[in-house]
Image (cartoon, rainbow over all chains, first blue to last red; front, side, top):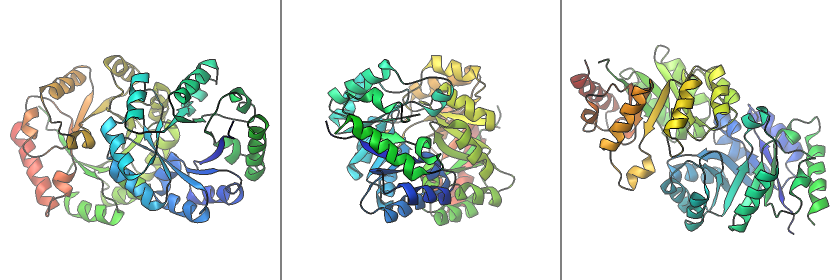
Length: 212
Length: 212
């Protein structure tokens, strides 16, 4: 089974802080993500800087595009993003219009999706979804479980590359061990550590234990 | 019937271009909005500059917050926003957490809402919704009609202040004439005109014809 990617979500409130973490941990991960909070704070400069720092990595822009698909996708692409998220409640028209500009469109699953919609996403050529434990849901006490795994598997069976995110840590990786996850997205479990490079390496080592 | 507000949506690709329009037309409108595209491009500097330019106007941040409600709301508030949008597919936990930080939370209606959810929004104290013809839906040929008006009226009956947006122009204002709309949000019908100040004034004059 192909080793899932490790994606670091940079969701700092300042570009300086995000760059500090990226400088140390960026070379260890497979995908560097400009998180929504960071992008709202610093604008497309955040994408530009990280693109320039990591010319050989995949750069993901967690834009959560909801409308004006082609404009937003063009802006993300111009700044250097390879991947961009759209929100599940965006219309099919919006997703389609984003996809004409940037191939790497990922649908972020919040509360607006269902299996019929997912079929439509496949029909317009969307290849990636992000299954997501909301930060606020996690704060409200929800945890990863069988229900989540079954959903992830079903999306994979439909042909999607599935990224998983939301409160992942070293202990949760093994829950997915028989599942061909495309990407694990880790935020504070890496960025919040005193040594983010070491934390990223531990994630990579843990992933390699189960997928190799 | 109280005169609805006129809100200008600044959705330019550069802060310079948005400021040019705001400089001429901002003093004529009631609410100055930092549009999503602009915010993604320029970051929170866009809010800061417009707040400083218009200390007495309402400043709206069309953030379309989907997660991390309190962090995103705090950042918007710190930059000077009075109002901030959350996306309809955000969880109730996210909306609640945003609302603890910034009272002026507006739910932007895409495809994820229903009346049961709207009841829940009322229960957690959300007072505003934005009824929305998607830009991409408009491009696909959809237009304002009775169905839209009925939805707007029902939200108002539930006690929401309702802003309407999406392809509004001088001809569409009168469609709402017996409806106590809270705010009309105009984008390119003002910002795309050679004289945005004149265009904004024409909107205000048209609104005053029916609500005074």
